[in-house]
Length: 94
Image 1 (cartoon, rainbow, N blue to C red):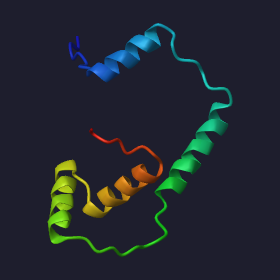
Image 2 (tube, one colour):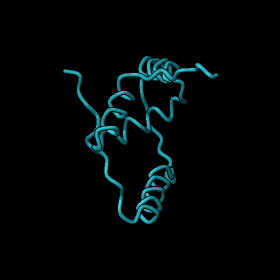
Image 3 (cartoon, one colour):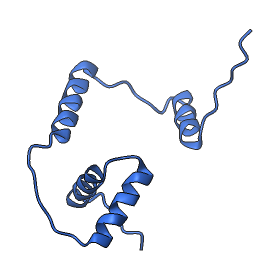
Image 4 (cartoon, rainbow, N blue to C red):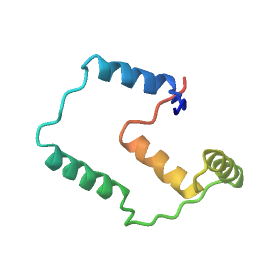
């Protein structure tokens, strides 16, 4: 008998509760919808332009430390931050 119980975090528990209460609905034309979303995601990840910027050594060091803490390359962190800014998803902590 396998007594290996799964452990869920709060977000996973909420999803499970919502699922069990019938809060989710099937997507009509799932395959078509999935294909469109995959294409959009792929297009979002295309990095076809290069930019050069100047910044202070202090800021670059802080960016590199933050990226290391997040486990991602610092260029990816900069690109992600710029993307969040232009799409309005960058939230001010104030």
